[in-house]
Amino acid sequence: MVFEPIVEILSYRDIIDILAVAVFIYLLIRFLILTRGAQILKALILVGFLWAFAEILELRTVSWIFEKLWTLGLFSVVVIFQPEIRKAITRIGEKAKVIKLSSVEERTVERIVRACRFMSDRQIGALIVIERSQDLEDLIEGCVYIDATVSVELLISIFYPMTPLHDGAVVIRGERIAYASCVLPLSKGVDLPKKYGTRHRAAVGITEESDAVSIVVSEETGEISLAVDGKLERNLDPETLKDRLSELLGIKSD
Image (cartoon, rainbow, N blue to C red; front, side, top):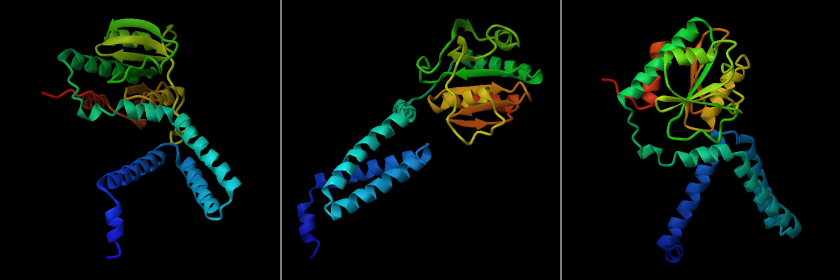
């Protein structure tokens, strides 16, 4: 009987409203925890507690200051996490999207793997980025336009030491090499071992800000690594690389 007045006051719209706010707060906290926002989340929680304490004591000036800080804090979150937010928005419809590649694109993967095997055996450094659903035009800089069919020989020629285009990334769009000598955003993650240089950090960085897949061949060890969703999969043999690319690009094995 005690709860009857509350039930009578709350309509189904109020319940939906409360649930929507709860889900939003949960997703925001989860987003901050899974990205670079652990410290920011702690700061926001602290500000929230201090603000509530000021409201309880009716400290009007302090409450006004915390209200302004709260607004500034939310704006800062949007600015700081702009790459992650853009990536999340880009992927909203990807769950329902079916990626289907033709046999030509399957042969393209085979050519990429063969080129990586050749460069790995000879410790030729390489960085290859494969576009998926997201266009990379806004994320890459300093590129040289190529627009050529992917071939083993062309990839090796681009990355061969002392050639004009070897110092940078190749961007593959569909079955064509779109650009070479591209500068990519570097990873902001702190969990990448210090032994990895600019090439590996760029390989991870482009996948932090897009849904692209990148392959990096180390010129020091010849190790082949694959980066996707901001994670680096190390020391792949050519067959494993082919299987992972086929999986990530939606190529079904016969």
